[in-house]
Length: 381
Image (cartoon, rainbow, N blue to C red; front, side, top):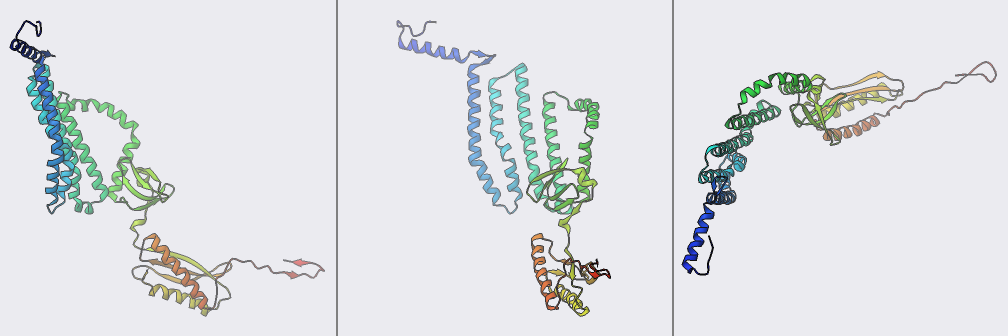
């Protein structure tokens, strides 16, 4: 065809231009009409624009409506499903784009499976993200169990939903998950033999949760292993922040098999001293110190008293260079900083009590006796 020949009239030339456009429009590309491809692309672009409008206006409106309710559950739920919700315009746009293309044969099967997979992905993505607000709603149950158990249950629920979603998508594409799992049985045995430590730590983590040895946020100590604040109990190891602010990941088995001290569950904090007094102190002075310390503890609201705790203030023993007064008592607070302040005040009070009794503290000393022997110049030590 000769385009825009000079001997033709303008209407004829415009007719030829229209025919050219129609010819290009109907040209096939991979057996798909070019015009249909352009329309499908336009639908996808329109869907992207609608997605932007949905994100900017619709979601903001729904968020404001959710905030007006008395409960916070809908706020958390909406925040969780908002990203999957943004996929709806894309899914609708792709659906109509596929319809416009008029696919057939293998292309039609692929397009249908792709749409099903996209819908399944959006649904299970929303379900996985919904686990968080659902467990937030179950916070009172966490008090009855423990925060760590709730955390493990939440992670397990997310993993289970993600697995089911992945299996559903594979089934859409004709990949049978059941035979795959059965075929992995022998391989799984070999893996299990090589991953004994992994399963041992997993079981140890379950025992820690079942026994409620500690919860995140508690101060724990295992001699020769670690001391610090537990932050997160994972499937294999526990994350502990030491007092120098460094992070230590300790295998759960070491926290389950060894003796563990949980300082956060102390009801009181102990003070245990041996105070050495001079041997030259009289019995009355010793008694005055003992009674003065006891009165201080009984009158001070920072200290706990019997029968809540045991309190012992006694003249205890003869030491090498002192008569020892044993002080055994408990403060009401378990906070380390507050305890240090109470102990500091107590030290000053004991010093005043000893001074008021007219005696003093003993310090390690050694006495050497020199005796003159009968021989001139002879000295016996």
